[in-house]
Length: 401
Ligand SMILES: *Cc1c(COP(=O)(O)O)cnc(C)c1O
Image 1 (cartoon, protein in one colour):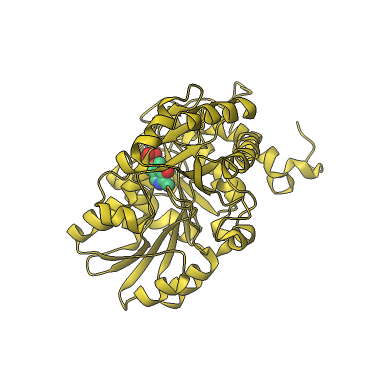
Image 2: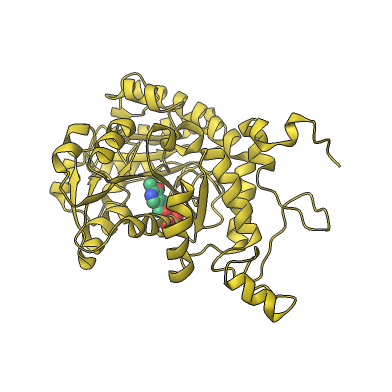
């Protein structure tokens, strides 16, 4: 039995790296070291009275894995510790997390303000789906907080931002936007995928809810889809829990377990990827075939001061404009042999994508221009390979232009 007097017996006295390995673990009677996968849809009761009490909420315990499951609980608890959140609910995908977090804030007749530079699916939900349910939206250039202030209406109930943004790595001032949202009685929801919880903690900067696609850095090895919503007990355990319970965007216990194992190495991976990304951003900035590099960890990023204020690291994501057009971008990407062409990110494997023809293809040419997504833009997600190999690969690719 661990000694109760040992201060490290309590999670709150442990450092984040220790919590990422042990936080939230619930051992079964078998004393397994690695967390168990509770791959069951339902739970049985000792007698009918026990079932009745559990459904009435008079006794603790699981009922059905759409509502809760021990493996999912472990993932949620470990993530809540990392984020410094009171509560968390996992979902089947990142998009399920975004949609559920917004549904919980909005009713027909409400209005939402969002930054215009958003992950494709998020922009689709806000621009195309919410209006079907009577929720209108205003998209603004997120770089200047004043734009949010001017877009707020009497019925604005939610503000949704992503920072750094996909794919051009612009930043939004989380604290300033949180203050504006709160002054109007709206909740701020932050999609924190690009920065990760390792480098940015939106709840500490005033956000009400943080959402992740766990598919990205949290799994980090390209195996499973998942998402998670974090925030206060009041917001998460009431409406968000009920929406998941009643509409069913629940995560599979197996995927929750994959994410839980991913968390054990999250900090190590993200720190290593970020170190490599810093070196690669420097290499790209000095390359004659590269016109511009967008990297929040780089002093020449137009919002470098803000990056230093709200992020503890520059992230593993880089965007670059090659010297040329679409053909030049394709020539560079096609010549790479370590870096994969894919639209995923946050993976152990380095990835390159051409946003204008893939993730942002749906947008009109005007909107792409407004977002700075030119035909010569490439987005890189730096992985865990040897950084010199990655630099040599990129040097070879850029040489083909
Ligand atoms: C990938 C991603 C999502 C969606 O996550 P899925 O797990 O693919 O559903 C949302 N926001 C951002 C910023 C993402 O990168």
